Length: 310
Ligand code: GDP
Ligand code: CA
Image (cartoon, rainbow, N blue to C red):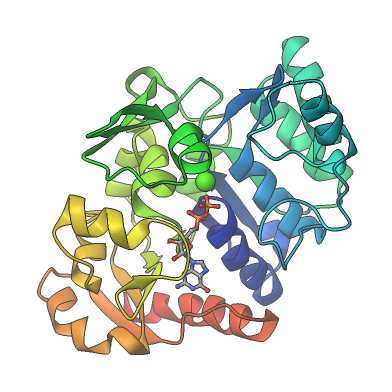
């Protein structure tokens, strides 16, 4: 059974690891957010693609929660000592990936082509696709100004309240090669428990991806990123409160109008189930904290079971 998963970085990567433990990894296609992509020190960096790549290759740093395991920071320390750009943390091993990607991009290779090459080189059997090969950049409008995603998220530590999320380039962006095929061939479409606004939002901003999901003939199941109405990590709940008016599971469901059949919510949010049902979306109550491999795999298996209820 082929499965297509829309995903951001760390939260989505955790979920994907559980999924590829539960099914044949080669049957899974990850369609990954590129709205966070940026240029640092002249290098093309794709944070969410890399989080997924590192997680599936088994080289992610689990404790830190981002980047690569066994990382060292010599290059960045040298940059810092020279007064160079050092706000975005790039480790030595991580830098190797950005060097290879940047060279390929400068030689005219598409992001999807170089991503496929990196995945093969790291032994990843799952297909990793950027949502689009064209520039698509997430911007946040806040009372303190408009910021590109990483300026807001990393440099300003997402402290500015967000009034609006914009996706520069999305209107003309075409899905990367393979994305629409993956959505059409999938027996199940999953939205990872990634941030709905800044991780899944940019993917859905590519019109032909959104319409492919709107016209799906197979179930689409989303996993809520909230537990007990709070984000496990990051700004999802704060954004939901301000942009959607609350942090119940129903507010999460309202991020995906016409796009999902099932919303998997945590036991701690069971009280919100009726409000989700009232939106015509089936709530599926389970344990959604992916604290270890067993928990990750169980959540993925529950998502597969959700097909029966869709
Ligand atoms: P990013 O691109 O690296 O910021 O990561 P994502 O957008 O893919 O994931 C961030 C979201 O994952 C956050 O909103 C978290 O609340 C959510 N998340 C992280 N770990 C878990 C977990 O164990 N369970 C659930 N349900 N959500 C999680
Ligand atoms: Ca991200």
